[in-house]
Length: 150
Image (cartoon, rainbow, N blue to C red; front, top):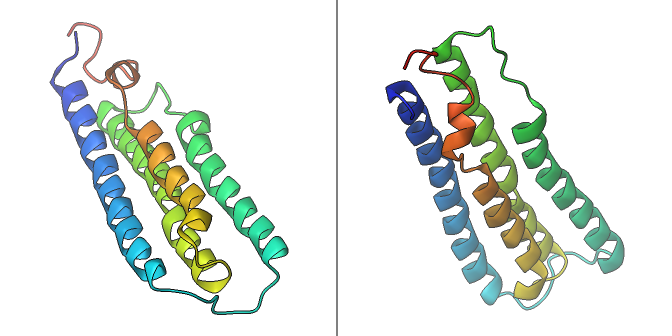
């Protein structure tokens, strides 16, 4: 059973990640409207090379999102409030990293390939990897925020 500190941390982390997801969703809607009325690319870049670079940057954002969640340790010797704050910050940073795919996709589509199909992978990464940042209750419970006797 989880205690009040665990519940508070879980709620706070979920709220922040969902706020990031809402911002990404608004960004997706705005970029969709912007690209809907765009016929020609803004620049005469090579599509193939630029697409490869954009996909590499998208991969880096996605892997950064995963790395933040998986590889940054939360030490057992930290205080409960420090652990909770660090957990919330890591989850929020992971969602932000994923959400940065939206402006990257808009920039790529605006400059090189003004097509909704070209920006769709960026949107999928933004929403999909942000969903992975939403914490599950067992992840917060494993932090031991309420102590062994609660």
